Image 1 (cartoon, rainbow, N blue to C red):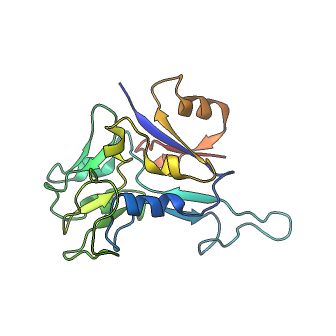
Image 2 (cartoon, rainbow, N blue to C red; image 1 turned 90 degrees about the horizontal axis):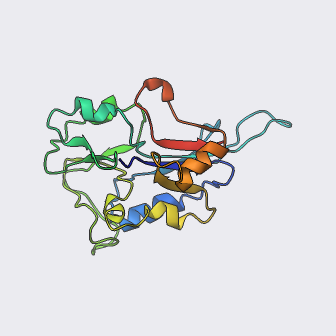
Image 3 (cartoon, rainbow, N blue to C red; image 1 turned 120 degrees about the horizontal axis):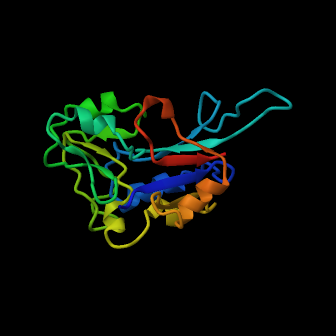
Length: 208
């Protein structure tokens, strides 16, 4: 069985947000919706250094999106079954047709800001659609999030953020395959998972 996961190299990530912007375009996201964004470790605002001057000043970026957990709290709490885990590859997805916009998944998820409720009247930066024609439609009053580019995976392609990263900071693949690139990277590098103590089993790893 396949279980997809992602690794982000914090030594290579520059916080450029190219992954977030490419995602926005490729999924034709409404202006109110964002699937992924970069955060700075230790600073109160984006691109503020952490640590103490002069010897321990740091600037490390974490790109935060859905973690596609093994035991997702959003799936357990969803009253309609709209939040679901795809059996064949472990992706956590939202069925927009079944979602009632109750935001229970947003409240249950330990990762703040990775889901967005599409407003009743979403707006778009242009008056014509952008991006992948196979990307999901944005239905008003439904919750959306990162899908690991399910439409691209179904075509045998990698998520766009993997291919677009100018710093080559991202690795993607099957965590259940010991010969996959991501399995080899995780075996070779020290890494961490965000909020691992919450017990959801996140499948996004950050290389130290």
